Length: 140
Image 1 (cartoon, rainbow, N blue to C red):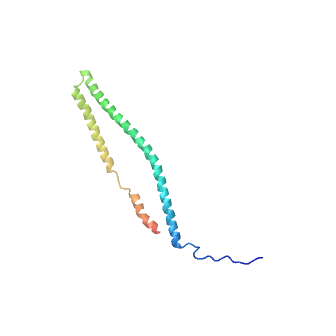
Image 2: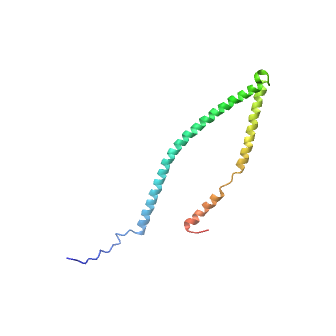
Image 3: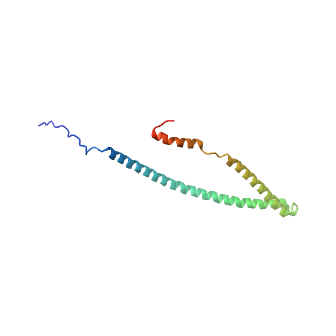
């Protein structure tokens, strides 16, 4: 027995509305962004931990280097004194101090010159201003 039955017409209740589709898309995008943020956080935790250990080791190395510079400074002052045959010990220490003061002044001068060369990221700012236009579908 063959019956010719046409498929039942779809009712409006079976098809999602535009509002429902927008709601679902919004929810899915929100979930995607949240998952991406969680992934970024977990990756950053590992990176921060490794970076913290590295920074701690650099800090220890700098501390030891500062101690070495102090010892070298004392040794240079005693070398200038040369067991009493050279300059008086107080003059030797003043010479070492003067050298470090001149070196610090030179570094400050070079640092100021370098800082004055810093400029705002003009290209990035300009591109940032173009984003709203691009989102609206406008071209320059």
